[in-house]
Every structure is written in C-alpha cells, then in structure tokens.
Amino acid sequence: MANITVIGAQWGDEGKGKIVDWLAAEADVVVRFQGGHNAGHTLTIGEKVYKLHLLPSGIIRPGKVSVIGNGVVIDPWALMSEIEGIRAQGIEITPDNLLISEQCPLILPLHASLDKAMEEARGSAKIGTTGRGIGPAYEDKIGRRAIRMCDLAHPDTLRDKLEKLALHSNALRRGLGAPAINVEEFVMSLTEMAGRLSPFIGPSWRVLQDAKAQNERILFEGAQGVMLDVDHGTYPFVTSSNTVAASAASGAGIGPRELGFVLGITKAYTTRVGSGPFPTELTDDVGETLGRIGHEFGTSTGRKRRCGWFDAVQVRQAVTVAGIDGIALMKIDVMDTLAEVKICTGYTYNGQTYDYLPASADIQEKLVPIYETMPGWQSPLRGVRTFADLPEKAKAYIRRIEELIGVSAVVISTSPERDDTIRVKEFF
Image (cartoon, rainbow, N blue to C red; front, side, top):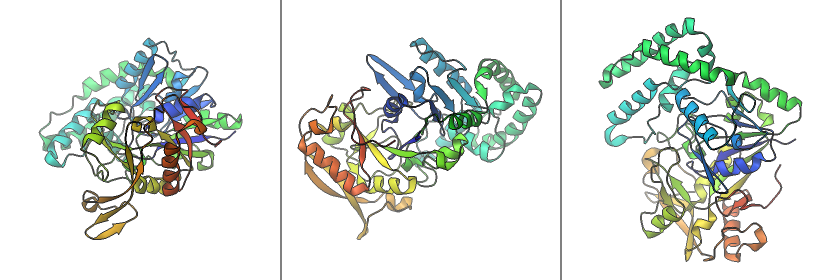
C-alpha cells in the first residue's frame, strides 16, 4: 500500500492536523517525525476541538497506531499533560496505540529557561522562538549531551549524564546571568516521570519495519513548514530541525523510498507567527479580515498570526526543495468576502527582479512583492464538498495557483470540519 508524507509548505500553521486526521482513516500507522511541543495542530470533529502538540494527529482515530519518532524532541511533562488532557476528552491512549521512540531526546526545564534567557539577550534581534526549549534541546542532541528516552530506564547512570549536560549549560547560564542547574532536582523528577512514560517507550523503527512487512499504510506527519526549515527556510528566523519531506526518513527510522506521496499543506493565503521576513504581509483591513475570519492565533502559543496574500514564489520554492508532489489547499473559505484576491508572482529588490526567495536575510526583509490580481468569488464555500460545486472564480484562483507553483491541488478544504474536504485527485 502507498504511504504518504504530510508537511507544511509555508511557515507552519497551514492546517496539517485536519488533513492528517482525514487521511488517517485510510492509514494504519501515523508517525510524527520532527519538532517538539512548539508545534500545534487543531482538529475540529463535530462539536469537539482537539489541540495537539506532541501527539500525532492519528491518535484521535480509533484502531490506529501513533508513533512519536526519534526526530522529535520531547518535554516529558508536556507530553504527559497532553495525554491526560486528550484522555479527558474521551480518547483512549494506551501502549497499544501510542509508541514513543527510545531515541527521542528530552526537553528539560533547563532548556526552556535557557531558551528564554537567550531570546531576551538578543533584544530587538529576537528570533521569535516559543521559549519552550526546542532549540537548546536540539543543540544538546547534536552536541551529544542529550538525555534520551532510553536513559530513563537507567537511573544509576542518569545522574552522571545530567552532570555532563549541566557542565555545558551552566557555562552558558553564567554568561547570561541565569541561575545554575540543580542536578539533584532533575534526577528526582525524571525518575518519577520514567515510571509514567516507560510503558510507551520502545524501538519505534521496529514497528515501522513490521508495518512495512505487513503491507500496512504509514502516514508521516511533519510539524512547522518548509520556510521554517533550518537549512531551507528564512534563516535565522527558523525552527531547529529539518521540516522537509526527506527528514521523515531520518526522523522516523525508515528508508526514503518508503515515504510515498509527499503532500504539502498550503493555505489559500499566507500566515506567519513571530519574527522574520514576510514579503506579502498585509497590515491593512484585508489582513485583519483574514486573521479574524480565519481565527489566526497559534495553537501552541496563542500568538496572533501575521496574514498576507498567497506567495506563489515561496510555495514553488518549497515544492522544489521539499519534493512536494501535490498540495492540500486550506482555508479558501476564509477569503469568501473579498472583492479581489492577489497572488505574489515575483519580488523586486534594489532594481533587481527575483523569481525565487534569496537566502540572504538582508535581502529577504526588503523584498517588494509583484502581484497578480484576480476577482474574488464572494460566495460562501463552507460545506462545499465537490470541485464542480465551487464558484468559477474560486476555481480560476485555484488553477492559477497550480500553474504558478508547478503541482496540482489534490485536496481542497472548505472549512475546519473533517468532512468538508474535497479530494480533487486520487494521489495514493
């Protein structure tokens, strides 16, 4: 059976949770492969709203196995809180339907406090992190200092590993004027947490190997978006992991040939949370309208999202570098009231025209968008479930986006509801 990999094609918050939940009906295993609890997925199913941060979106579907892969950094206290919260909403979560990779690095309170101290030290040059410790945790992983899930089963060596981690962290903290780490306190709290998490921990790559052998369908779920990728995004205003489809293989523990169809989740307009360049940002009434109707507030942070016109240049680049085979076009219904809609088809800077997003942060922040204007459809799309029933002007907008980004919109979402989803083409 064909697998599928779902990633964000913009700056995150594109609506991946809804699409993963929708696709999970046809999957056997759902894998989260990178990021931390800075990510947020909101699922609206009937009258219930589920807010997920670390748990794969497939956890809401009964009979599915959800896997948190080795590429994810985990705050164990945040994860247990999320598990308990989702259980309180009537969802069963047991070791039978949730597996956490034993190789996942942990986010400890020292990471969050260091994250906040470093962000504060940057002053006006803040990156716009969530302050949840994701960056420092990934730094410790690369620096080979991380405490991993498998370490929780060995309390006799845990203290020594924490001492080595503290040696590095305390040097940074002294320079930032932050208090030193109390290792003994961490040993106690992690030992208590080990008992609660240990039933879920195991070799996740074996589960995926077994699923492959049994010809089961695997759905890989990414966090954030391509423009937040540490290599391919608007650096340094990026996350600390690779968000492109290729990282699903390394972040889950499976060969790249198993990733299947790569679906890029893409809003019909553009949003961004936090700092960083945003060429099509709107600070006028249209931007306010998109934010109000689209309920554009971050699931994880509650921060108001910046809103702007669809940037075909940025999405085309994401399609190329991330290997996207087709897009799911989300939230087109948010634009229902607009008399005209615009698409960015290029940029200018200092007299030069660009048909791509330059890597230089100095150029990115000064790019001027080139727009193509189209008439709006001014007709409610909420609840439309076939492409034929879309207004002609909405169809024209979609087709123009497809022409500009080089791949088809294989899915179109017309509301947050699970069933208000048009499968335009079969893609797996």
